[in-house]
Length: 421
Ligand code: HAM
Image 1 (cartoon, helix red, strand yellow):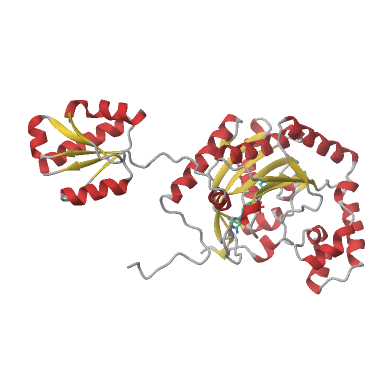
Image 2 (cartoon, helix red, strand yellow):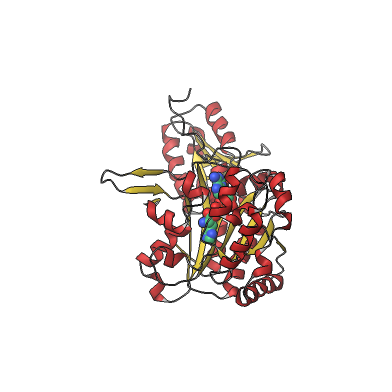
């Protein structure tokens, strides 16, 4: 029987063994980030609501429809983070990391919150890996961050991830393009909501998935054809660097992304087996975000990778990303004296780097062996009164069933040797 309570609707939760996969996947990312010189951050889960309004943009769905906003007891308006980038930049500026040399290279992970309609791969509490490089306009940083995510997916064993790439231009070239696009879109036969979007956020219309809209915008002017010389040079350089790294991307001139801060390089990682929620990660440049939130001019680039969807992708591709087994050796004591001896032995095994557990609560041999099987251990160490008198224990191979007596003083060394075989 469960309790009278359930987790709130749409919250993605993980319990073993899936939670261990999540942890292993994060650990693999931590290693990639460390190798590339990114430091770890642990940040506020809720922020001043204005940070997201000004940073992410009031016209976005994320800010206008999906934020969990509440007043605290002092009447301040706070919001559970719907994404990490605005908070990372806020923290970098607040802690003065940008004064200690640029670029500031950081990453973080944890839950983010969006009040979306839940379905497979789309949750109200979900998990991201977020990485940001702040303070450099160098296209090499763009390629470095993309390569890091790419190598992480590859390292997990995913082979079907697609990288979709675009440039959204800058504050020099985008306004003219935006006006041109608006002019084109105003001439189409669109519904009321979409017409409104044309006025507020016309680029988003290009990203509309409905066939009737898609057909109409097929001939729309594209940002790629209206980039200024420096945006074009930047984009060409990023593509050249990706080619040098043998990263296969697809140019996607209609890729827009749902957050307002993007400039220049923008991209998404897509997984073809995930159906409607196929975006497993995304990122790009945000060269004006620092100023938008009241900071100094500081260009930046980064990405957010969806952990929930990455796990689904691993499962869809049938990849067994290795999590070391939780328990390698399981202690089965029979009687109180044996219990104390096994308790000490389990501590000794753990100190020797062997994952060990034991049966608690004075279980019968049958009950304890059942627990041993359930633990997934390769070996059980069974200790009865007669064994203690003989100074040995029975070591049982749980997969093959064979059993032999091993002197108590040799158990750790013996198991260590057998486990590497
Ligand atoms: P985003 O595309 O909004 O970008 O989210 C990044 C990833 O988070 C998505 O590709 C998706 O895998 C996952 N995700 C988003 N919403 C949900 C949801 N409701 N349920 C499950 N997974 C979800 C950002 O958040 C930017 N801050 C990324 C970034 C960092 N850009 C620059 N730096």
